[in-house]
Image: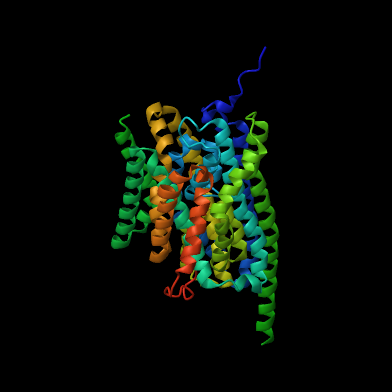
Length: 244
Length: 247
């Protein structure tokens, strides 16, 4: 009896993206954040009296943080839902919802798929491609934590070398890297089909309008919801343009 | 005089204790979060029966590193002065720093009348981030974990297909505009758009073999040209470097 065909060629992403082990890892990440919050809250409660911070101040701070996070959290949830079909719930929850962000993780996944000669979402997007993309975005996301773990103690000591970095370089280099990366990734989508062009254009225009309105009307919620609104509008346009 | 200096000493001692606890446990929890977050993909890759060569993994990671490597280092550097050491360990694990955690911290500081940069302000932002994290975890669990999984099961396959095929341009169009607007560097923007267009529409059709490294080429080209042609930009030294909106 031959073993069943290797599942490498299968494009049923959600079959492996919802593996119980991945759900366990999501629960683990949630758990770590809860434990960290509890430890930090206790440390604050101990130190608070010495800086004239009352228990009332602590309650107010907690409530202010919680209330102000409602809008942005729902906005992130909307973006995350749009990505469920591509990555499955566990990857979306741990990558886009926490730790990373839609911009980074979608880009990293696209880049990783590209190195295998595959494209996200079409028939070349097999289970193996998903696994490699998930690997690359997670290890990439871990690099932020590694950088934080290394740099925070250095910065606390006021390390002269870190402070000596040219402020002009600190402003120009990251901006150039990010805009260059997103422009290249975005333009790479355009030759794929007319629908890709429409989707990209609608997404970019809706975001531009949201940001303009946010500034003109002083409504900062438009800035928070910009990404989610743009994605939904662009996907709507894609649905119409592709005629399905 | 003696009374106030004893009070000061007590404050210092309490805050030293706070710093020690938060950096020790901040580091420990962040390492735990890091390990758990990579455990899932490692399991899929090595135990998922998918027959993936290690070389494929390293090439994929190298391509991501070539694109985002600079940001990995720059982002913690730009956020440190705003967040302070304790909140760094929270922020880089919870994510969505610029659009959620910073506003939460600022509002909390305003509401209890604490100035940013003071110790009271620092404690307020740590507590505010805990509050924000609680709301964020709850909203993710309910709206993405439960509602989202249900949505996936009822959405017509055609819509699922369209979403899967076109979500990448749908995200990138908006993200590109957002990056351009939030960075506020017209010169860098023009250079980035020109370099990216040249790479995608001229270089790639001529040398298709470069597809794997096209983003890295665009990033490197943009960084070099933007630096070379930086001219006398309105010195960004005055304001803190614009934190990049990625995490």
